[in-house]
Length: 189
Image (cartoon, rainbow, N blue to C red; front, side, top):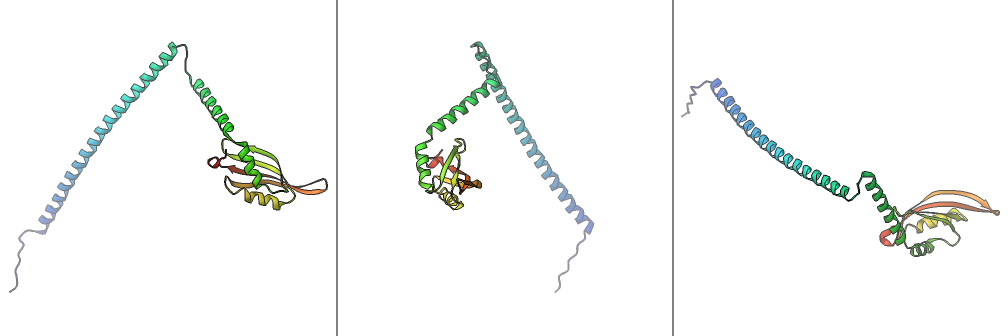
């Protein structure tokens, strides 16, 4: 036997029910999301108030310290702070220069300089660890050999900055400038 189904409700009625149910669910979801947003807004207001209170306390402490310093006969200004920072940087630079071991540096360099090459200038930068080396060689071959040797520890990042051929006392020579880094971690600047 075949089954006989009868639906006495109209299709429009069912569609309206589904649409109303969807709208009710959307309203509930929107209400929940608005509630969450309001809670977060309240939290942000509280944290802003706490932050403002902390800033106020710090400003009061700064003012009190300024007053105490003023009572001592001094007034700390931004210029005085900058001057102090400059002095600290100068002292740090002097300490770096003092801790630099010229003996170790020149020994390391001497091991790497080819025999026919002469060094005329050594210019270290104690802040960056960079060194500029200038001199002359009978040919570019010796300069290239030196650059290759300066790629070994504690030297690194060696490159030729300048070269020019010249003639002195009837002999050709190559004048050069090389920049490299003398690594502080391995006994450098």
